[in-house]
Image (cartoon, rainbow, N blue to C red; front, side, top):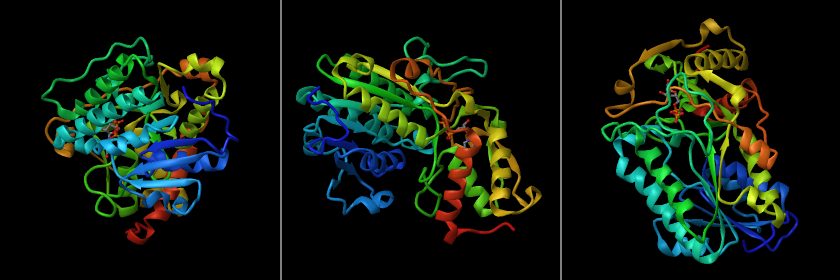
Length: 359
Ligand code: UDP
């Protein structure tokens, strides 16, 4: 690594690729609040980060990793965080080739450039690389769990395949300083989009349920909503990143973080999707001050009718959180209800001009 990451050192510039996205926008704000660093941010979209565009510590480039000159520029910085990705499940089936370009070709080019320049690449992968997990599968371990992806005809796995190959590529590049982050269903303000308003297609479950609640439509439970997920507040995710950065301040501790993949999730927040729907209905009712009976109900749909041909699912996605705790002292803290309340409150306020009230 090229530099020691003192938080007070204003000569350090961190490159944040995907700084305008859901996670990137939260991380950007936290870097400005908790350090003296400058940020070189790259994204195609800046609507979530308008408040930072005039900050003298911020340089924003509207571009993506498809451009080799952009990749070379990014790799000049000592720390590169790559959050850029197509990560909307609805697109994994219809646009598999584009999903693979975004999640393999582009990060691979960035990894090559970082290997040449000596930058530390902190790459955001996904918990989806654990693949088609069964309902009775146990906690997923970073360095031990077997991985089974569905068949090629189930194009849902295009994303996981590309992300997994990227992880293998990083691990195989001899000269690269890398760390991989595997998010487990992060939630919070600015997550995804509201279909037809600021995005098209099907976002992830929390944004889908929030949209349905705000529009007074039924919440769709794919295949009955039996699949389980561990929803993790984006604020915990940001704290995780600061545990990673803190290790970068101490050259003696670098082996705790270099050439390592980490699950970032909240195992205590595990819930079946059907139960999540009921929780969200109840949080919505209390935020709006209406009886739960006035909130839209649920409806069961098949995966194929909802997402299209090629949809498949992981039935349980439970992280082992032991490694992050042991090596970095990180443990997610924010309970499910608090994370849902914050997300839904933000969603209602943010999209209030498009709201069809149910009361
Ligand atoms: N899901 C659902 N209704 C929706 C959206 C998603 O029941 O409106 C289910 C989906 O089939 C999966 C789980 O919720 O079992 C989580 O889906 P999401 O798209 O949020 O991301 P994933 O965790 O699968 O990557």
